[in-house]
Image (cartoon, rainbow, N blue to C red; front, side):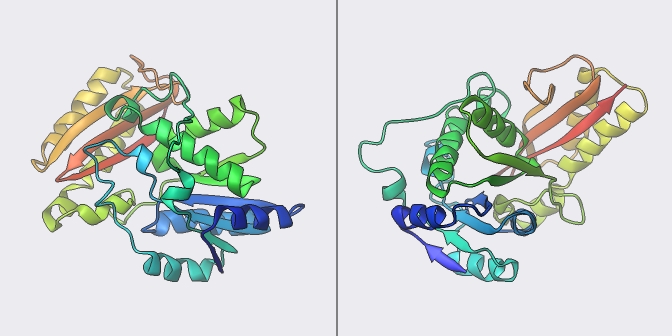
Length: 280
């Protein structure tokens, strides 16, 4: 398990691996079982596995939690060891974004909906760093979790539009036993907030149950979701949306594959979750 910090060294490593399939798992560190499931999948389908750890400053807003975002490289390395990644790539901010950096990548239309509407500029920061990682690591495969559903759709669109030679592999959300989606930000939750947080997933399951019972009206479904989440006073809804899973345009009725996505503040932690519904 080799640790690489220098960009040129990472590029040299990837160039030397020409002819072998490289799988990249981009992360911001403070790893959990969701990240490790991506590493495991990469190990099974790649000759070389690279896990990047980089807390990306340009995807955080001015009042967001960049400085407080959890970091523990020693812990991350220990968790990764059994999964045998070939490289842990830990670039420095000043090398990724040197003084005078002014080039950004943005996927129009998809980036200003859902979380992008609430966090303007967030996905421009995400696509910019992901493209930089792709250019440095030169992966054949890149692995992302469906908890960040909007993110992986945007990255797939970027890859398609720019003819990038990398396949995006999206894997299912990994959850705690009570349904809470795993997230590095779950560490922010106080005990009572942690007890309340699973209601977010319960509201998604409620939406699924309503659709399975024949309800198609998006407003009625979201109204019931809000009632359920509202039963937990520690939670403040940021948004709930029922939308097309490819364009994120809201729909009035659930027909075919439809995405229900939400974001909410549980105490100071902003948590997101989603579920794909299948309407008839």
